[in-house]
Image (cartoon, rainbow, N blue to C red; front, side):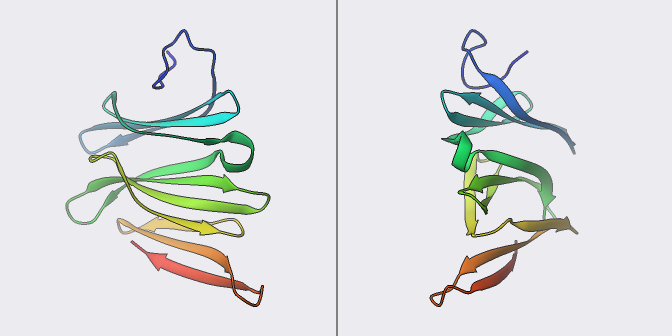
Amino acid sequence: MTRSWFGVDTQQVEVFSLREPVHDGVVEIFAHYRRGMDHVCAFRDEALRYAESRGAITSGIDRARVFEYGEHRELRAVLVWRRGVHGEALQLLDIEKGLPIFERQSAWPVGFSIEDNLLRYRVVKESDSGDPEVVEGTY
């Protein structure tokens, strides 16, 4: 069954899917291509929690991960979107609230890992001089 915020009768192509079992259920993230856009949906136990669309060629979805954050095991999703020719954008979502927490844009591919219920990421910014500047962060 095709799951998106469009009906099953809408012409669309699934371009990404992730199904991640979590402590008391499942999180699913799907991306469908339709009319030049990637439409991303995040579901928690089959209920739509988040939806967003971006241009498929220059800003479409590239990859995603789900993890449990902190001692209370709050569900988070990391989405990595294409951004232009070389860049990417890392977006962190609160799955339970269905809201974005932050987005970090990078001139080059984003690096990230999830260790000990924490997200560690690396983005590359263009400095005023035009030289790349590596910025690392933890959430």
